[in-house]
Length: 492
Ligand code: PXG
Image 1 (cartoon, protein in one colour):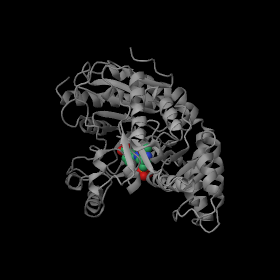
Image 2: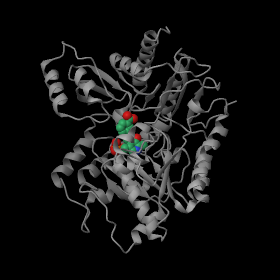
Image 3: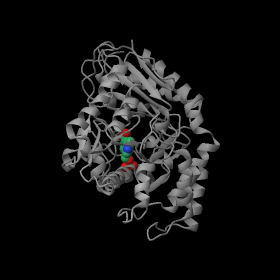
Image 4: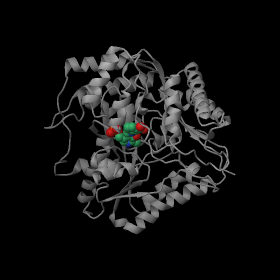
């Protein structure tokens, strides 16, 4: 029997039969928000689409395809709803890109940003200078992070935070007189960003060949995807088996050559992979045993998403360092940070040589002011407690009801993260040929819901402010989209 999951997670396994063909596991294949160019579009929309098609290179997009269809133009947003230039309303089941934790249209954040823009629109933190917002934010963050992670380096994106970590950990081992301890191990299907080092950390195969990545000094191991790869095994045993691949890799490379292990508490863009409960304790044991630093990528899990301030709290992880971004400002400003614990922190703070790294906008006053206001809203409205309590529980209860749908093989989730596995055969876990995630995602859009397709896994990550009534609407729309997908596949 599958192990009983910890109370905060839901693994609604329908079967543990051997899987058939699993999904492509390719998360970005269906990232674009395509729509059919319709002659009924307003002139203004058409004009924006033309400008965009002529001049705008989009992230993770096949531009020929986008130009033929025309981009959806999102013009405004309020609460959990997005509005496009044609006036269509969509419930944003993804909180933007897993980031708008306090919902759209929050005046508190806008006002804090406007105040900082008026008082100190910019000054840098180089040359022995700071600003009140960066100082206050770093102190505030130290009260929220796991024990000991009390020092912060600020950057502007998750990619930059992880890139900065790579440089930091190299510097750390150099200062320790261990310049050979440099290889960083991360996981297949991990997503850590797109800069050269962050993309090298990422384990999504399509992200490497175009830029001749990964760089030397990066290695990837298996990831704990029980539903897709665990077959008939007990999830607990599967968790241990996959954790062991870290030890195997460390021994293969030599522990004296391995600097750190980098992983998301829950893999997000790689398919919302929630590890079995045996996984994280074993990973931590292995890191300690071989003196390998543990870096938690909290870019999605941080700021309440899993029901605690950080995923490390939810999964009882004690990392040496963390990356955070997204929910830090609820996406209202571009801001990220690397948090470091005492081991790295003491060495970096006491180094007699200069830390030769930093961005023009590190600790930007406006971004830090917005982050402070964002955290205040989260605290005042008890959003983390709600995500770990009633809102999260209601979301997980509704998510679990989708298991009875003919297309759904498994649902799983934690806090306000949810995944729905679309399968052809619930017993064998065989997948449909073709991109059913995109098919379902398109039905979601048409029905007025933003839900993300990753291979044949649909994922949800709504704002933490979502109400029960809005969750009812979200799941009604999800069922509608699943029904339309089933019909298109000839199942219903
Ligand atoms: N780490 C994690 C865990 C992420 O999810 C990054 C780092 C990089 O952050 P920036 O700010 O550099 O993008 C991310 C970003 C998707 C999707 O479609 C997910 C991300 C970014 C874009 C798309 O799921 N995550």
